[in-house]
Image 1 (cartoon, rainbow, N blue to C red):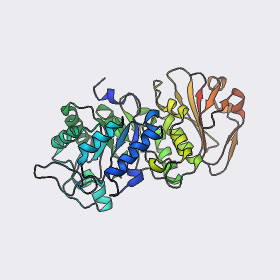
Image 2 (image 1 turned 45 degrees about the vertical axis):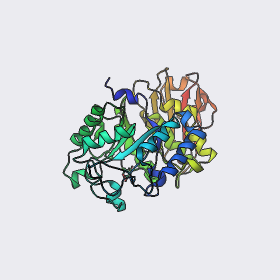
Image 3 (image 1 turned 90 degrees about the vertical axis):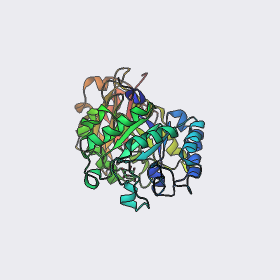
Image 4 (image 1 turned 45 degrees about the horizontal axis):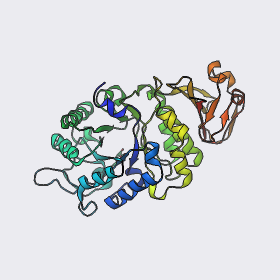
Amino acid sequence: MSRTDALAQRPPMGWNSWNCFRNSTVNADALLDVADAMVDSGMRDAGYEYLVLDDHWQASHRDSAGRLHADSARFPDGIAALAASVHDRGLKFGIYSVPGSTTCGQYYDNYPATGIGSLGYETLDAETFAGWGVDFLKYDWCRAHLNDGLEPRAAFARMARELDATGHDILYSISEYGLFAPWEWAPDFANMWRTTDDLHADWGSLSSVIAQQFPVSGHSRPGGWNDPDMLQVGNGALTEAEMRTHLSVWAITNAPLIAGNDLRSMTDSTRALLTNRTFLAIDQDWGGAPGTVYGHYHPFVDIWTKPMSTGGRAVSFVNMYDDPAIVDLRPHLDVDLQAGTYIEAWSGSDFTPEDFSHISLAPHDALLLLPSGR
Ligand code: GLA
């Protein structure tokens, strides 16, 4: 096991600013309010430990020594002070950069800056992040093959070496949207790697991302995890049923859980979903293989299973259909699976062998089952 593997023996958990703030409204005061909310809401104690500042934090230019620094209007005390305040709350701190010359914010959102990508500054940027007390780096591709002619594996591996050279424990999260089959090479040096394009807070995006997990779900292992993107629970147009589906698939595939909602105004029902103990127990357990699709029924109910380290298998039934589904899954499931008694995560109810004969799912809804007593 390498040193970096030790940083992510379980799927990483935390919160990231992008899905909530997106643009340059992100600032130190708001982030510290989020950090307080992570503590007060019970998110931290449930395991969400990293607070990650995504794109749009940078000043418009590097300083005279070539160092990155933060926009001084929004981060008046700088990033080291922010990281220290986050640490004071018992949390870890993450930040964002890119391997090329241009951040996604510059490219897609006209973020007013030049020369803030890490290309040519890899050593200095890794040292800067380590010096600030950064615990997590999200390193985001942003068309670097087109803009800068970079080769993804080499560019991402370069920063991995620089992070290692700092001697600091910095979890390494890479993001190239699954463009170059990262599950085949990123496990050599990264702790998590995106498998898809950005997940948006609507059913079309969620169902597409879920479908894209089918062929790649076997590549995770302790130390390095497939990342189907940050959570959109509590955001946008997702219904409660769709949020249950979102979290059920993330749990059964051992996906990193990086919340992306505004924790300062989180509803009780969103908090209950994100901190559901049965859901977290499944996501954080490594039973020797990540979850995969066991089968499809009729053909819109997907059945996912994953082995649990304590024996037996966790199961999820997901209705991808726009209509309710009431199905008898006994003919489609092996005897072992049907022999057990489970607890259903979202209702907290027992699920007995008889219940396999009449599984009722609302449109876009899911059940998530953990073997009882495990
Ligand atoms: C890309 C990433 C997002 C976010 C933005 C920032 O789109 O996929 O997660 O980091 O860049 O600009």
